[in-house]
Image (tube, rainbow, N blue to C red; front, side, top):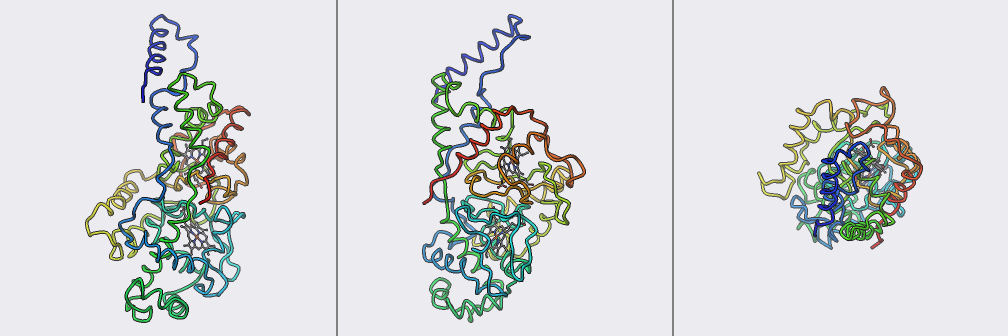
Length: 390
Ligand code: HEC
Ligand code: HEC
């Protein structure tokens, strides 16, 4: 794209500075070159999630069909009443309460995220406890609070209702699978194959960004209806410092000062050790990627980040995607914020007062002094991120 108009603006700014006009200098035109780059990163993602080399069944339609049936099956839980769908249902593929109920009325510690577009994610769970979609599926299956299941229950249910489907994919009956761990990994991989098909991308937001970028080029950015929303998102609100790229997430962990006095308030700092030593992680024996491949690079990075960044990752959670966020209230890992307006108010005040959460907030989280107009424009922008159903 031509950057002519921007260069002109920059030249004008430099001239104004040279002429000593800086005290009355108007605000730098939006976007500047760095901001333009951020805006260009916000394009819609590929139609389907990128291939996952650790799951060779990830793009199999047969696996996805079996995965869909398993996702909906309460017979996999110990109590017989809870399926994955129990907590990931409806348009938003989540629940509309702060936490959800698993077996025997037990309550989850955190807000269930949506499974929409989960195939595009690289970390799973709010604290990054899983690093692949397929290994994530084992956590709720085995959690005493969620499905409270076991390899034995899984084997029995697969034998009872899915024996031939299982053999079709894995070459043997569930009863012939010698290792419990292999059985569990196979379960995770077919569930993931299904989840990878549950996507809503292509949102009005994507059209707005494309149009806005042409307006920038034509020198008419300020007249564009998305101007105030995008400017606040990228400049004054600093939202795009973390919510960037096609999925509106940097795939990193940050502490934004969400009130949390629970046992699990340390976020990724507590989860990283468990993941790094987990048999089912992406570098372990159940990964389908070649040993020593780039797949293990992310885990090594996490390991060194935890050591080096220390305090910065204390109480830090994954930057969630903002795609479809209007469908997934309530918000944050605690599910404490009811509406998008509440979310904007939290950012506007720079997070909760110190003492309400572990660690310290990230440097980009500080009081924003947003006007009512800017807050409204941000909410409208977030609402425009709802993708088309497929
Ligand atoms: C009782 C409710 C409940 C059940 C049942 C349940 N989940 Fe969840 N799910 C949650 C909660 C709560 C979280 C967030 C947990 C956390 O971060 O600590 C979650 C997180 C996830 C995530 C991570 C999303 C992300 O963006 O990080 C995926 C994927 C997911 N669940 C899929 C499943 C699958 C597959 C099953 C069935 C095998 C399942 N869930 C069963 C409540 C549930
Ligand atoms: C420092 C990185 C960072 C910045 C800057 C940031 N966010 Fe976030 N955002 C996060 C993280 C991390 C979470 C999850 C925090 C948690 O649950 O503890 C989050 C959560 C959210 C959620 C809730 C999503 C859900 O599914 O519950 C929304 C909405 C949101 N951010 C919008 C914004 C907006 C709008 C701005 C700018 C005003 C912004 N964010 C700035 C990192 C950031």
